Length: 147
Image (cartoon, rainbow, N blue to C red; front, top):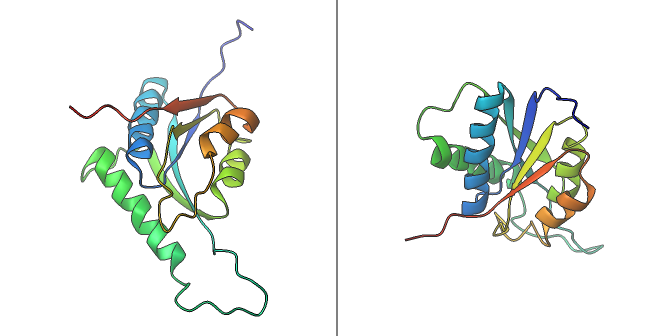
C-alpha cells in the first residue's frame, strides 16, 4: 500500500449549500497541489409524481440547477474560475450520480451537510452514502464556523 498513485480527477458535489462551496474550495486546493482537474458536479431531477397527476410548473429544473452550480463556483472562486475547474450538470439523484462519478474519479469531495439545493430534491444523507459506497477515496468537508 506504499504505492503512490497519480491523482488526475477530483469530483466535487455541488448543491449550492455553504458546505458544498467549501468542498469546492478544498477540492480545488488539493487539485492545484496535485496537478489534477476538478469536476464541479451538480445534479437535478424531476420530482416523482403520482400516476395520472399532472403537476403544474415542474419544468426548468435543469436551468435552476445550472444557475445554482454557476453561483456556487462564483462564491468559491470569484469572477475568475481556476483553469483546472470544469462544471458538469447531470440529470439524476445526487446519491447515485456522485457514486457513479466516483468510478472514474481519483477522489470525491462532498460537503458534510447540504440544504437540499433547490426545492428539497436532495433528500437523505448524500455524504454518508458516498462514504459508504464510493469507488474512490471520499473527503467530507465541514462548513467553517461563522465568527
